Image 1: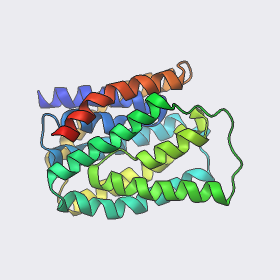
Image 2 (image 1 turned 45 degrees about the horizontal axis):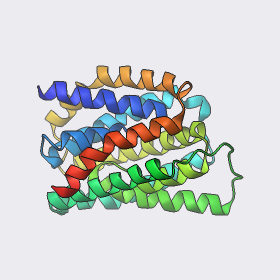
Image 3 (image 1 turned 90 degrees about the horizontal axis):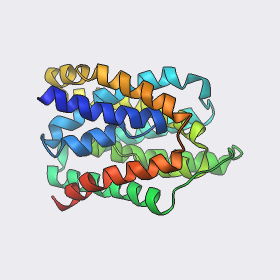
Image 4 (image 1 turned 135 degrees about the horizontal axis):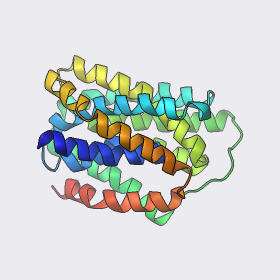
Length: 242
């Protein structure tokens, strides 16, 4: 039953990840922590996210932004280094409420002010600084609660068209998820069972990513973002309320 539930969560998250570049970890954690202990779920999802981003790297490789992507990747990973210490130290109820709160921020953004930029802005110091700052802040959140890099999501979705925002997120998440898995292993949060459980979700992950990737070029992202926000709202509220 546990493998089935993790596969269903991975399938839903992978479709979202393939379509928007985001959603795999958030959907998995926000649903699975309602059933399983928080510290058991987050490390497994970190491994799943690493696999997800490796596949996404292959699917979206032709769209990579080699100027902005590395900035987001290095900055997000730096934030993860500090945030991961909080997962090992803070009480579980604080972590769960924090996760719910940051997801609700994303929900509010997409329901009431859904961004849909059409053109790529010029690359300058202001853009690079905003991208780096939001990535570091997002990395701290990712390290502490496992997912939900809300500041980075808000920044890229407000400034970049969906094709470019997905590529930047993929590059950032690939490096940060590798750093995250290594840190969790070092802290003793990632066990052998966690690795096997993550590997068991591989079929669902591949199916979901391919489906989402195809939908990326057919479905209007604004509509999907609003649907995703509604899907996330209930589990986020339950995490905040406790």
